Image (cartoon, rainbow, N blue to C red; front, side, top):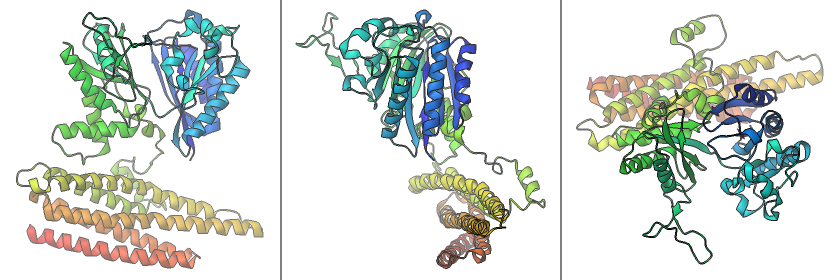
Amino acid sequence: MRLVECVPNYSEGRDTAKIEQIANEIRAVEGVTLLDVDPGKDTNRTVVTFIGAPQAVVEAAFKAIAKAAQVIDMSKHQGAHARMGATDVCPFVPVSGVTMQDCVDLAKELGKRVGEELGIPVYLYEEAASRPERKNLTNVRAGEYEGLPQKLQDPEWQPDFGPTEFNANAKAGATIIGAREFLIAYNINLNTRDKRIANEIASTIRETGKPMKDAEGKVIRDENGEALRVPGKFRACKAVGWYMEDFGRAQISINLTNYKITSPHVVFDECCKLAESLGARVTGSELVGLIPLAAMLQAGKHYLKKQGKTTGVPESELVHIAVLSLGLNDLYPFEPEKKIIEYQLKGGNKLVGMAMNQFADLLSSDAPAPGGGSVAALCGALSGALSSMVAALTYGKKGYEPVLTEMEEIGIEAQRLKDEFLTDVDLDTAAFNKLMDAMRLPKKSDEEKAVHESAIQSATKEATLVPLNVLRRSLRAAELARQVVEKGFKNSLSDAGVAAATARAAAEGAYLNVRINLPGIQDENFTAETLKEAEKLRKETISLTDAAIRSTIEAI
């Protein structure tokens, strides 16, 4: 699936009616999902995040820019955040199935259309920049809206698209459009009203650093008159300090332009140290817009390691630890399902989301699905969960120091398997339903019969591959169960034994579901190879789990 994210920033954070008008333009475009609308009163700015197919995203961005130009008057705008236009910035971010160059092309397409059809000056920035000096957003936005008339007269700062004079559409200002990696807009809160402390910390952590000064406090300059700078601590980090009147505190406003280079938790820890050295304290932090799941998981693992705890815990626990450790509930409640981008895009896992009694009730009815395939996958998930549990109970126990690292690795791997098995619970039922849909296709004409048969063959293969993948994972689950039986905490030996038993149940159930589908497949090579692999996987899993269960019985 080709997906592009767009994160426009609009210069309105107080008038909810205007914000809603802009958001509705995005909602109205088919193929686009509005993920987040995050207004800020002090900044008088709203960050909107939406995602979708490339051309649909361009269309939604254009319509929203047009609406913002109608409802926002920049000549009357005031706010703490730097800004140049009603739609201040509008970056495209590659998510899946698209390249950065694709996003650059989208930025140019949108910029040309905004300039020509809306009469708004457009500057390209970041990866779409037409000149090196325009790559940095701060450079492009220098002078802000008030300096735009003069900027447009400067030959070096002619816009990439649109009018070159401050014309009748002046109230819309200029728009900066580009393509970039995922940016995390992240603010760190201080227990002081003193903006100078926030600025001092910001200048220390940001990549551009701060000007060098002599003993008298004067800025040191080179032969060209340019200020010499002390490099900042973090790459891909932009930061400023400001005062938030609504909350009566200073805040460090940070843009992490590539969290794979500099992550929020690394910056947070450093800001805590710097604040302490300046007599202040960090009280928490705030996420503006969305954050990738990977960044939250990195933070969760980082803080668990600092506590001497295993990182082989559920994803939800890693997120919980990250939220607590970063103080993300300091100003507003942090809702992972709304703030983590992957959680916004999760499909409806209908079976996995059920309560256990609901799933069992549905399973016991005359509904053809869920059935044995979903139950086999569920058994695999339970096996992974038990192995992770035993590994976690073993981690850090006195006398088990030699297997500390091994137990953490087992826990991490078991958690991964558990999550994949849970996905298979719904995938198995979805594959069955797809096969039923294929069987219902019309077959009156020869052409319809050919389509009908082809659809059945394709769906039957898919219905076979889902349990085959469960069978493959079952072998790995069995290996983990054997390891925790042999080396895990002895008081949890029965749990390790059940991990082996459920791994075997998963394998046997998956094997049966592979076998029942094979006779309906006409591709003889596919059938032969699949059966051969399934037989081998089943045999190896049974051997491992038999040994693990036998060892468990002998030891208890």
